Every structure is written in C-alpha cells, then in structure tokens.
Amino acid sequence: MLSKKEKQLIREIWERLTPVAEDIGADALLRMFASYPGTKTYFSHLDIGPGSAHLSSHGKKIVLAIAEGAKDISQLTVTLAPLQTLHAYQLRIDPTNFKLLSYCLLVTLACYMGEGFTPEAHAAIDKFLSAFSAVLAEKYR
Image (tube, rainbow, N blue to C red; front, side, top):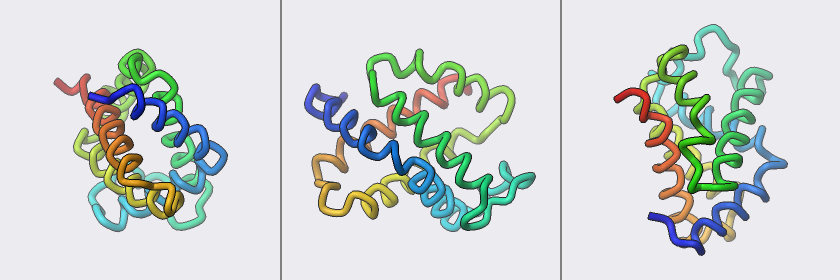
C-alpha cells in the first residue's frame, strides 16, 4: 500500500521523467532484452536494436503509460483497462514480462536519476511498478 507521501513522490518523479520518456523506455527495453532474451519473441517483427525507431517508439509508449498511471494511482485499474485487454487478448504477452520490465525500469531510473533516486524513491517506485504490473496481469486470471 502506498502512502500519500509515496504517491506524491511517484507523481513528481514521473512528471520529471516524461520529457525523456523515449530514452528511459528504450534503455529499459534494451536491458530487458539483454537480461531476459526470451522477452524478444514478442518483438520479432520489429527492429529492436539500440537506437532503432521501433525501440524508441515503444519505449516512449511504455513510459508515458506509466506516467499516466502515476497521475492518479487510485484509478490505476481504470487507466490501464485498454492496455490490459490489448496485452492479454490481442498481443498475448506473458504477464511475467511486466515484472521483468519493472526490474529493468528500476535500474534505468537509478541511472537517470542518480542521487535523486533515494532509498525512499526506490521503494515507492518499486511498489508502484509492482502494482502497475499486477493490474496489467489481471485479465489473465
């Protein structure tokens, strides 16, 4: 459960990161593909190499969706409903991949935020990304 202070911190962090959404998303995806090569199977029809337009575009979509969810965490299920359906029924993404991407996002955020990625920020973002992943995976049950 996120406290009011954590929710505010999460909103502030994602607002600051929105201008570099493409960079953060692409970096997190590259980390995921390198660390968990099986996740690349869902992207076999795209160029997902470093610096590719597809990688940057998809990475940006991911980060902007997370930032949108951070605006009102109490409405996360409503905000993510279209993405739940897309990922579960059309794309059929293994829900484990959401958690793997969350791990990679934490590392990416630590790199981008430097000293601003305090233990409090780390804990709050980790909780939020866990909730985000869980909500995305709800349609699989």
